[in-house]
Length: 302
Length: 228
Ligand SMILES: Nc1ncnc2c1ncn2[C@@H]1O[C@H](COP(=O)(O)OP(=O)(O)OP(=O)(O)O)[C@@H](O)[C@H]1O
Ligand SMILES: [Mg+2]
Image (cartoon, rainbow over the protein chains, first blue to last red):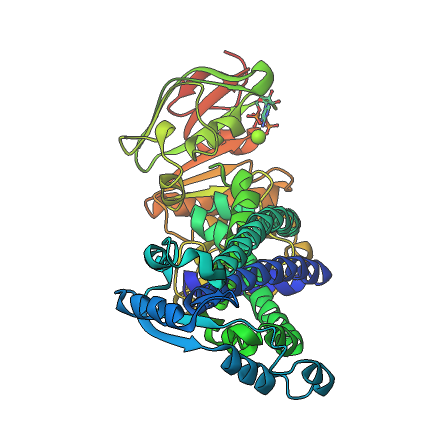
């Protein structure tokens, strides 16, 4: 054995000698890690949802019923020439009804109320954009004096509202997450700090003698830092398991909810497993190291 | 080897422990430091091992000023000197062997090397058969010898013993002194702080007398007397 293995061994011995205290310290660190990773997951998911929606924004232009088909086609052709247009499609009132019927084939009662004569669905032009961030490029056509009176509504504006609302929610979650995480992490540091202080207290004689016979500060500090790191690593393992189980349990429900924007939460979690693990390890070990360094400081004055 | 220049030490709350201390100790000397309780003997020793820093003055050990050692340097400095503490500073929950090994582990010695060295050192102080015993199971003289053994783990050129004959009967006390003399003969400077008149008188070596924190006498071949 050399100094390094001695330090590791000594740290591990304090960890299990502390018994319930170690359990409590590990518990609070675990709690903090689960919380931090929940927020990180939510944020990652949120920004991915936003990105997905952004990519899905097509401009859908709905026309008033009195607009002439020929005029609509003219507008469609103008849009097709726009450099940001990937594809343009005209959907007549009749086609709109077919599509609607296809989507709602179960609700027969509703369908019966809609006949071709009393068709409430508008004709529309759908534009898929090459760059979803630059939908304003179509304004030149759509806001023109020729087109404007015929247009009932445009869907990209609504979508943009949704995105803005989502962005606000995500930034709220971020602030909330940072705040709550800081509070819980501070609490975790305090608990670990006190646990390690108790270890130090029970070994103060040993520490004093170590100093007197020429142990370096790192040799004295080492075991306590190792003890702190143990709390962090074990807490990471437990927190990882908890987060994984939670995702398994609630992921499918969330995926169902987010189906329209194509988010499979469990597989999304699996894809981001590495990030979560790294975040947890850094946080957990950070809590352990910071706490132990503060706790031992007083005892090192040579 | 050691040179103290105008050293003064005050503890917190203005307690004056040492003042105007000028002392020079050469290599291979055997010096007794005597003085009444509270005269400042242990304080002098704590200054020499950089456990305390002088309030004023300078302390040179091997021409190096140790009053300004950095926190990093102190441990390495301490490994070069052996100290026998007035209160032993042995760990009750460790055996004699483990106490000795502890001091070696701290400096990063290999386990295999430690296993070989511990019995050798215990043999030097005549305690080989007590390696597995705990300090509580030993006599006062034996504990004192364990403390000396631990002080020797790094083969120091300087050994400082604070009151090593404190609670011993004359026979045991004399055995300890014989041990220190032997160590001195092998080429180690020995500094001995003591109250013990018989021993100091019998030693016929240098005696430095402290009174209320001042050196009042420094004799080449001294006798124990606390008067000027
Ligand atoms: N850590 C301390 N804090 C405050 N005062 C101290 C401290 N250590 C010693 N003193 C004081 O300094 C003075 C010298 O003490 P020191 O321990 O050096 O005496 P000593 O000569 O070793 O005595 P003894 O023979 O009883 O061991 C005493 O008045 C003591 O009360
Ligand atoms: Mg003393």
